[in-house]
Image (cartoon, rainbow, N blue to C red; front, side, top):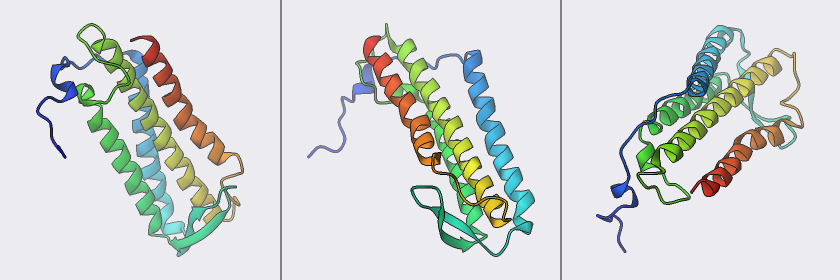
Length: 174
């Protein structure tokens, strides 16, 4: 079994980083606003939370698990980790796995599409975490009862539909 190959698929790819377009700047700004807002809201509401808060939700959005209020920091930490990880990953588009062969002629287009997808996913995931954090806070303060029945299908759609669309466009542009 070979764990590491000398001739990796990305070895012959151009090492370029596409310039950010206005849409990319917008996505980065939305992600940054989302993560800063999430941290700010948690810092503000943490002292006002009861000792036990919802920590898990069932498929229809009702809380079915409870933990210490410290668990809100775990949710915030995961959001910060995702934000940081996706930001770092986006610095190396030439290392991504692509559904098509990357050549010097198509590299810029495919790197741009993949990086924009990562940025979009970063925005969506950060705002989903922020929304979930807000709902946990609202439930703890008795001003909400759950995430809502449609939250899971909407969250899944927001994540997977753009990925599917990306693969369709990537295949067509090869």
